Image (cartoon, rainbow, N blue to C red; front, side):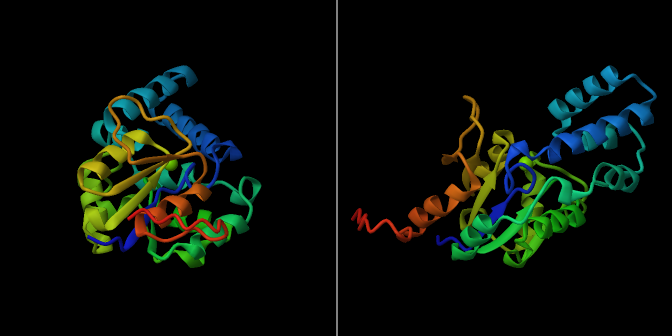
Length: 226
Ligand SMILES: [Mg+2]
């Protein structure tokens, strides 16, 4: 089956881990949990870790175990001046322009956060669609049913898609559903089955060109393998 779509995770995938943005989101998550549960900072940290392990995200645990105001939580944790963390990335824009596939974002955050990040990076024009948590009935990666809903929204079958992610755990259900998986800037453990591992999202072009049987520009290498 031919590829028709490449799906990118958003945070810590499209931009590097060292921007501080995810750390700030994590900080705000912990503030919200501390204030909502009326616990200490350390207890809030333990709750986050427990929910991450058992439910995939803090919000997943909060929804399963408490009657939380989801919108209040999501608004609070994403209320961040993105320009303090992210700048337009012309190299990323150039790479996306060169990829001959439809492009979408699938994030555990909101659609609004997704578009804000894409605009801050100067790459919003390259994406057809952002799938956020509200589109998948508030389920989250790494739940398999969340991926199934995402594929349904995108009108694509798993084997037609490439998924790019910084979380090896989130790629397990993608792999099960037949997507080709590319892990960015992370080490898979023995339970993870990923197809490719790259250091930077900019390395995705080379992998995709290989999958599509295209040459990556500029090398002058024939690279024929038949
Ligand atoms: Mg991520």
